[in-house]
Amino acid sequence: MPYASNADLPDNLRDILPPHAQDIFRAAFNHAWQDHSDDPDREAIAHRIAWAAVKRRYRKLGDRWVEKA
Image (tube, rainbow, N blue to C red; front, side):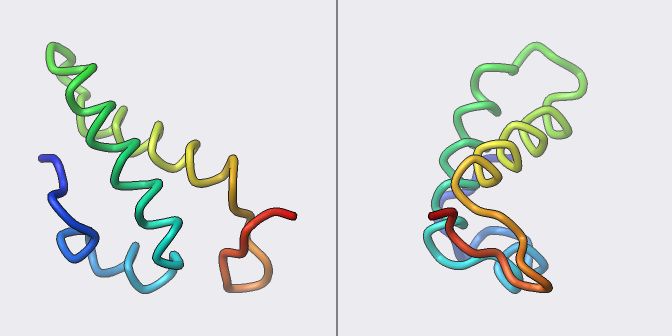
């Protein structure tokens, strides 16, 4: 299920990711959701792709996600 806004993301994602990282996650997830419409593992694939997109720009520092320099 695609996310219309960051408010629609699961609580755990909104709690740990900064707003810009949420934007990245949501955009990547929605794009992957459309691209993999025929795949039975569509949701899992979309989540993996979205996390990969976040990790290109952010890294986990302790218990926070911070933008890479």
